[in-house]
Image 1 (spheres, chains in turn brown, green):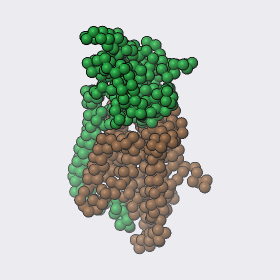
Image 2: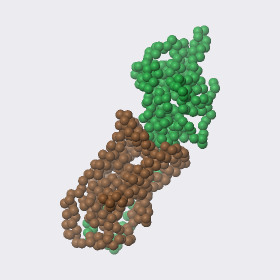
Image 3: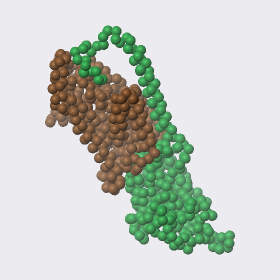
Image 4: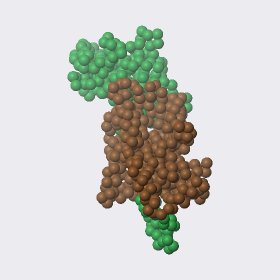
Length: 321
Length: 291
């Protein structure tokens, strides 16, 4: 439990702490890895021979994200009525689905919850408890996908030393979450929705382009030229809402110390590298460490790890299989 | 991040004395980061609050779909999903853009372009709304201005012969008004012949004599009237508007449309009025008052 509270604190913005206690197995592994450099390199090269680096999860994820968003679009355009509405609220073959953060904003602003709103919110809550909380971000949110494409541009420019990534304090997102909640409660307006690129993009995909896309473009340019993935990392309260749901989720990424060569490729591709603190040499307190709730389960680390140390894992289920 | 691999056998602790010269640099970096973060917070919250300005100035007073709560409550309860847009058979409902601030993604109707003619009978947008922003029955605690509640349930002309002919709608969204009597063809004693809004007009309407369930383009349904009475005959609600005779200045009998208490403010009269710009308009969110 203590470790879960620790992981939630990291999600809210605190820096990951070095563990003070290690399990005997983990200690043994850490000791074993202090072998001479040549042997370590040889093992690493051996692991690399397996050529585990792929784009498998990224491709699956992009496919799911595109299908989910285009299902909205075609439901309306072709009138097939599968998934009506937009990401903020919809009906999937008649069942109400309501985005948790939009629901929160409306509930706080309006202070009146009708049955359909409650049902839709509860359905989505349980859905994302099952599917991994912030997996909403990387598997569904259209802004995430566009931001990923622009991130590629940002990294190219960083590579050429034309721009640099200026970081903000991650606690900012917690502050935003509280501020937007309080503002909705006090003002009676769903203020965050005005700027939410998730809602703007989702509506634009379904109902056609809008001026609001200009704001989304500004955000993307900010991320390209000033700060890598700034909106998702430091601002978006939707991510934190789903992150809290993710604390309960059985779906997560599992780190396996025995397969890790501490090369750090995973942290380089990660949207939220603070959740991968255990991959630093000597930090893992157990041989298997689940990645914290701020993880979007995007699978980029799984794809990039050359030695298969990071894998998708379903609590309870993976052991059975 | 990247140098972990090279640490190898090295002691993970920094060499003695390495921390001391680093400290002021890190302190300055942290201070910059803090200032940057504060600026980001103020910037984003400030920008989002700027969305209040268009709402406060009510630059664009929008006609909301039938069953909408009072404006402030409507903006707070609407989840900006557009399900109402998707179910409307005449595509009367549009979503507002970011220039309307907090009103972004909130549905409205441009009655002159395409009014709600209740051709769905059941007010589908109300049924589709997941948050109760559009609702048949408003919660008790929400205030309702005098003159917004209908004196009696509006009867839909199309359903007049049904067992339950009323629209399940308790409040109006506006009231029609003859804004330019001088331009009104009936007041001038003129008739009308042809397409009500010209050949380029894209608006649609349900005509019971054509098809109860399929609205057709207004341009495909030309009219021929000795005295123009389109706002009266095309009004979907019973006893909401009537044509009244009066003696004109030239001594001849003239007519004028008179809006009655059963007007719900749907805007069909505004859409169908063949005069450019329209002679009759809907006053948005206007309460009913005896003239």
